[in-house]
Length: 226
Ligand SMILES: Cc1cc2nc3c(=O)[nH]c(=O)nc-3n(C[C@H](O)[C@H](O)[C@H](O)COP(=O)(O)O)c2cc1C
Image (cartoon, rainbow, N blue to C red; front, side):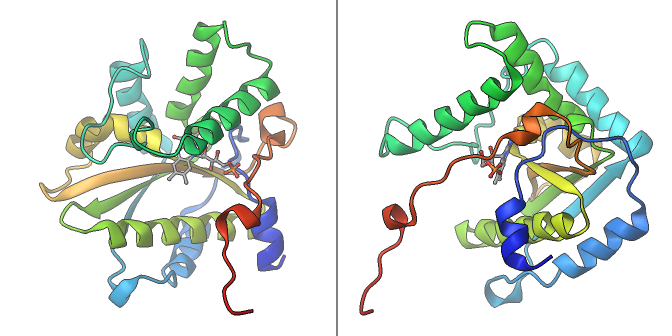
């Protein structure tokens, strides 16, 4: 597989097989991902990988805190989304559009709030993936370093494609920042930025047919001097 293929075929995988991933294989991928670039080579990322009982333990935390209402807790510090009222409406349109596309593949209508909520809660079971990753950053890092964390995560996602695995980045885990901070024994200056499910995709699952739209390059790219 070449890089172009990996970029084109990567999707957010939201249904996985329970096929295990060994520490050795995951460790090999993460060692390669260390080659991700970062300003000043700070490498401002840290990863906690959970499988087996460690995975079950975080799922259990989510069950305790969010099962009744997965939307109940909203991270105040470094919120997941911008304030859509303050910015170009196109961003909110895109967010809503991909949400609708996803629920269409699942056959869950807008009115069925309970089914949508139940589906959203699958996030907190890693969509069935055998491994969850959590990305930790020092709160004293600036916007630049948060962007570099993103490069690292994308590198992981592309390397996963090469291995026939799938990933879903999951900022929804930020809702459990407080609980997971305590659970993992993180220091005062650590912040859990995002989670990621990783494993072998269930290719028969309709949700994995969702190929999210993108804006035309002409909407986001300006060529000067060509
Ligand atoms: C940092 C980050 C966090 C995300 N968090 C979630 C999440 O919590 N749950 C989820 O289902 N998808 C999540 N996504 C996936 C996005 O919804 C997805 O990337 C976007 O809709 C484009 O779809 P694609 O990844 O299939 O191309 C996240 C993506 C990123 C980059």
